[in-house]
Image (cartoon, rainbow, N blue to C red; front, side):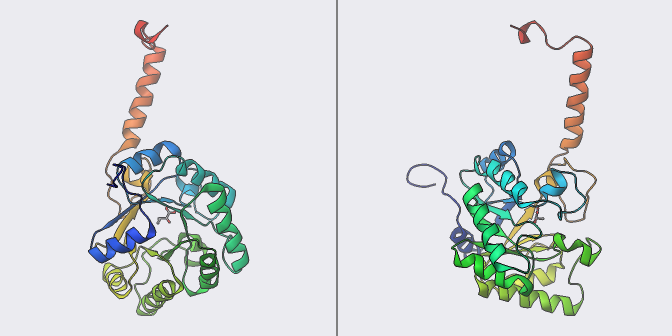
Length: 271
Ligand code: KIV
């Protein structure tokens, strides 16, 4: 708590301090005002406006189709709700790869139009020029290594990454490159737990794991997955805290029954 009694805002420095103090960092996704408000009030440290919005909000099979305008719209909705958490906005596919000027322009749009606090980019050495250029504008950057869903057409599958020595060595090297470039944290997605431990111990910036075992400095899940709204996705790493799919379906069925049976609205619910 601050001296004014309000919850202290989380910054990139807070996350570094948490790693140094051995405190675990919590991160969840959000894409809209109402749920972002609940997530922020629930006390999560970082809210990711993830490009997983392409899947859970728009129903696409991959994260590839979502546009910068759509990400900015989601980030604007989230930003209006959040008082405490650090907001990270995913840069969508095609807005940062291969051209650092386009990357900087895209990141500036996210910061100016959506009032995001930082951006996240997928990849290692291949995108380090874009990361460095974004950082020159004072925009904090989170990295993302391991399974990088925007590259699904290269991998061909969403299975665990970096099981082989060569890919594991590249991932360790990429993590160091991102740290040296100035990233404030790195998401490690779906890699073996011992590798995630090794990376977390070998860099000074926090690692945030998803399917990367218990030794990352923090954990992230997709909100709709952990709330049980999306039930067709059940990877081993996912812990479901609610089964909202059932509860919401039951509520909708009950509502239909009440209306059709002329039970709703009753006298008290009428003017
Ligand atoms: O878009 C997303 O939700 C993500 C998380 C899986 C880390 O990038």
